Image (spheres, rainbow, N blue to C red):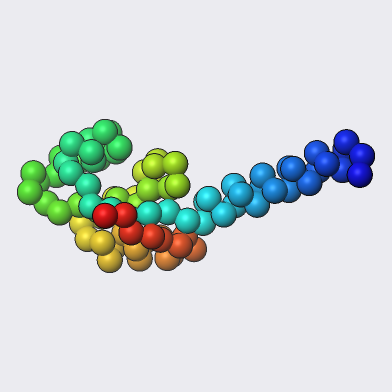
Length: 86
């Protein structure tokens, strides 16, 4: 195997990894403070509202909802597999 073939294999592995990461995200309940950090553009929300976030594998926010089921539905609509974090 020459150097070019090795590089191509590494690129393919990297692309597969990126695609896998983009198809997986985790769901967890978030506090109002976390919401303000993650979603600075979010409108003012009631202080005691239950909020759930969909986060990519690097912890970057994807979506925010008022229930776990709503955030999971959003993921499903975008063909993203979810896992829960406690």
